[in-house]
Length: 335
Image 1 (cartoon, rainbow, N blue to C red):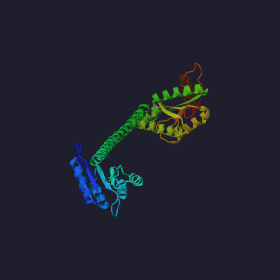
Image 2 (image 1 turned 90 degrees about the vertical axis):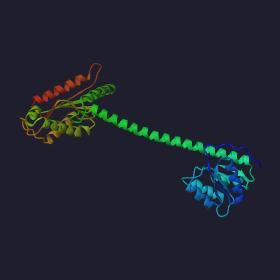
Image 3 (image 1 turned 180 degrees about the horizontal axis):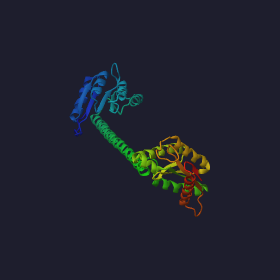
Image 4 (image 1 turned 135 degrees about the horizontal axis):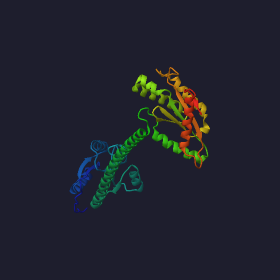
């Protein structure tokens, strides 16, 4: 064998040389050392596995025909270990049959050099595997960094989405009662109106007013009045929300219930259920001239959008029905 000029591999690689023949080990260590590689040695399979597991090398040069544990088994165990599964293995063997090589690659080998070997071939194959392994580590490091960044981006996106959802809810909810606010009601009414026009159906609306709420506030104070509004809103939401209707605070002590498709609902019975639910809450009213508890009056209306009809006409019709309920004595449904 002729010596060749020693290139300067950078960074220096750590190579584990495994062979039961001391002469082969000495020769390989001399060749690799002259090219700047750091070498460790093991003269059998168990020692090779112990050395690799203690400190994973950058490359393993592995003989096949060793007593006790052959190179195939050493390679399989290296590939089965978490710390060494990516370490490239170059087999060096006098066994040059096709079956031997197939078995070596099947065990996880990255390359195969037949004995006797040429110095230049050994160095070229070693440099090639070291370079490939280095590039794989760099790719893995980049992939891990990308995965980390992607995880952080996903978490940030989820936080942003959650924040946007909270902001959207805040922008669409009444600050006191938590039900939909007038903004959401107006938008939902327009959407329901357009959908009803498309299907040639109707839109239903209830306007609900707390009876004698001013007297309640005067007697109990505004904090108690706020609590009354909250309890009425929760009760309406529990009853109407389950039916898929939108409950909104329309203004002051007045609430609205939007029914997008009244063809599927008995509006009169629905309104009566809402009225009864509020009365069932049994919230004491200290100054009601008609009841010992808080009650509500309900006005209901349905309209089919036409070429000229606008949602304001539905609101006006429900408002007129509410006026009739109040004029008839309150705590009732007007149509």
